[in-house]
Length: 453
Image (cartoon, rainbow, N blue to C red):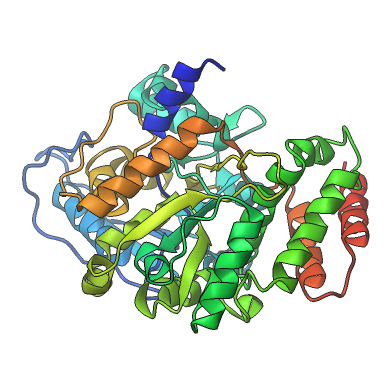
C-alpha cells in the first residue's frame, strides 16, 4: 500500500485497547441509579412528555471500560432515559470475564450487552451474538457503515454480518519500558535480540526483573508469540491457519525454539506463568516498578489516566517500542492490528433498549468519556477531540505509537479458530517449561488445524 495511506492509518491507529484488557479494580459493580432528566447533547431520542415510558432493565457485562467511566456513562444515559436501568457487571480482567460470561450463558442469566476483545474471542462468543446490521440501519440509515473506519468493521464481522460496534483501534505487540530505570543502569532501547539479552542480564544483576509477561493469561502469550512469529516467519502463521502451508514449516518451528530460548536466557521474568497481565504484571510494572520492560499493547497509554497511581506515573519517564529485531534481518516485527467490539445478546428480551444504550455508549457521550480515559482514537470517521490535557510524556508515547504503526503495516491479531488458539497456549506453556520441543509443538497445532473443517 502506498506510504501515505499508512500515514493516514497511523493517525487512526493512535491507539489503545485491549484489551484488550482493562484494569478495573472491582470484579462486579452496580451502576448508579442516575438523575432526573435534563438536556443532553446525545443523539439518542428521549421519550416525549406525552409518552409514559415502560421501565426496562438491561444488563451489560464485560471487563471494560473502567468502573468510573461506566458509572459516568450510565448516569448520563439515565438523564435522557430515566425509565431504563442499566445493570453493570464488570470483571477485573479479560480472562476472568470470559469465564464469567460463559457461566452466564450456561445458567440462563445472559446479559443484554457484552464485549469481545479480538476476532479470536468473537469466534468464541459468536453463537450468543445478535448481528447489529438491522438495528444499525434503523438507527443511522442504510449507509450506517460510512460512520466507521472500514477496517474496524472488518474486525467485528463474520460471514458477512456485523457482530458488534467496534471499540477504539489498539495495536498489540509492543514493549513498554521504564526509561528512568534503564537510564540509571546505562541501558538504551534494545534494537536486537542480543541487546535485549544484555539489558536483561544488567537488570537482573541490579535486582530488577527484565521483560514482564502475564503468561497466566492466554491472550498476552498469544500476542507475544504472534509477534515473534511475524519476525521469524513473516506471514506464515496466517497461511498455515488457512491451510495453505503446514504449521510445521521450519521457520514456524524456529519461532517456537526462539520462544524457548527467551525463557532459557531469562529475558522474561522468573514467575511469568504465575502472573496475570492485569493486575499482576500491571502492578509490578507501574506500581512496584520491579520490572523494566512489559509486553503489552498500545492501550497501556491508560496509565496516564490512572488516578490511583498518578504520582508514581508522573515520577517516571516511560517509553514504548516495537519488539526488537529478533532474527537479525534488520527489521522489527509489525504491530498487531486489533479492534474488539460491543455486542448485542442474541437472547436479550430488550434488544431495542439495549441497542439504544449501546449506541449512546459507543458513538455518543459515552465514546467521549472513554476516549478521554483511554487517550485513544475512536473507530468512527468523525473524530473525538480529547478534553483532557496530555502530559509531555503521554503525548510523546502517543506520537511514538503512531510512528511505529506508520513504519510497518499492522497485521492480524489473534487466532480466529478458538480450538487452535487454545492449543497454541497449551503448547507454548509446555515449550517454555521444556516439556515439548518446538517441532512437536508445531505438530500439535497442525493436528488441531487439520481436525477443523
